[in-house]
Length: 214
Image (cartoon, rainbow, N blue to C red; front, side):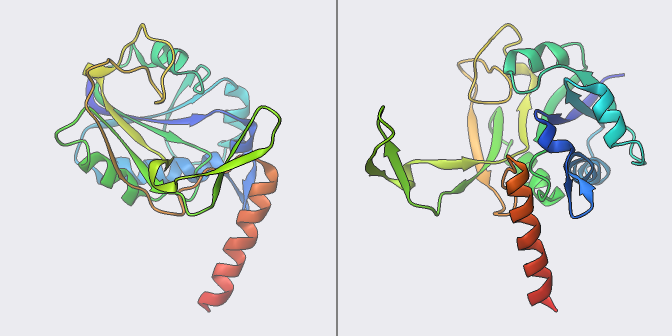
């Protein structure tokens, strides 16, 4: 049955199946995506895209949220494009499961940012000092932070600009050359967790945050 919006949570690494404060990242990400689905007035359907369906089922076996499975490698734009091509939708939201602290408000902000353009995603400023490295792994110069942005998710894209036969892309899906692109401001907590060490660091931060809030 056709629907306005497909919402895809992507699992691109086993990190998304690891635990943060007692819940695995995919479960937390799905809850945020599901909350957005229930809050928006657009007809929608929720999916999870992953290479490892069995691991996904084990990680979500106690989760009372209905979603459909897409078996593909969501880290490759051309593979994800082929997986979603049979789906009937007008717009698609793609959310990275390794951003577990992303709230549904960021989904809504991104959807609002789609007005007047074809594809939109949240970004945030870099606050760290960025250094360029040469071929010998030597620091050479400082990069101007105002010229780079940190990307977050979800990306929301109109079906009409998805290049289903395309390959490489700086977005989650290949886009047509004439696609009108835009950005909205990302919440600082919607950072990506890339390793088990970063999960430990995030847990320490959350415990500290809860402690000072008392």
